[in-house]
Length: 303
Image (cartoon, rainbow, N blue to C red; front, side, top):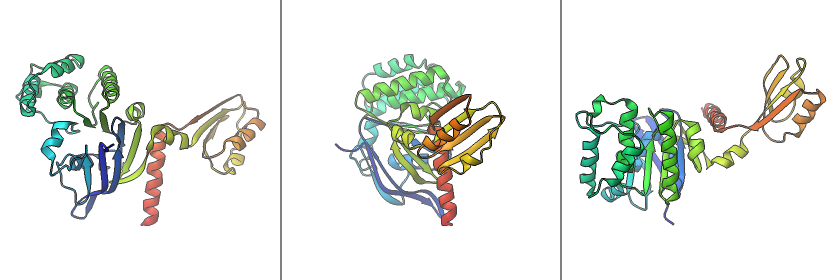
């Protein structure tokens, strides 16, 4: 089956500045693929190259089996895009935007647009310059979804949305994927990606740091172990254990980060007769920070 998105050595430089470097991605049809990184990591530049809005300076890409540059017209009919820096015509209403985009795409019916507008409670009859950030974002979501595209490329899609609309958006993403369509979700909102994505790629300074399923990343993540004692404890025996880092040890509350086997840690804790114990794998937020710290250290070592 043809990949929804495939890149090989994709790169973009601006003079001596490297925005994206040697990016290899494969996004399978029918999945939610999270593209993670803080602002300035290269997420938006990557998306612009995928959609032929910027030319790469290295490598190439295939989107729905199409060349983004040679077959851009056909590609844009089959893709829905919500940019992170959404701009609307300020004097046009939301309704005028929907009608205009429908004409451009050759759509005869606005039924899907009306359905989505009702679902997201979109303000349609005021000029968009009068709308709040959240209401403009809802117009953008409808524009991206109204033609039922095979591939949705969403850059910070819930920016400005209230919690109720964020929940509605997540329900819609699940429905889209259930229909066999694909969602490429670029975000720095780790909690959102953790709830929605099947797989994630993490990018730092234009370079891929990690790519894997959310579940696999969680399983490989360090564990956080917390123990409570009646009196303060000496953290030294834990520091001596392989793969263990003492995060804090104050007032009888010990917090550890454990990579690898947990049995030696539990034996040490048990010998001290704890009052309570909590152990859990790191969530995606913590793993993200660990991967970033690791890639920064690797970059410093290389320098």
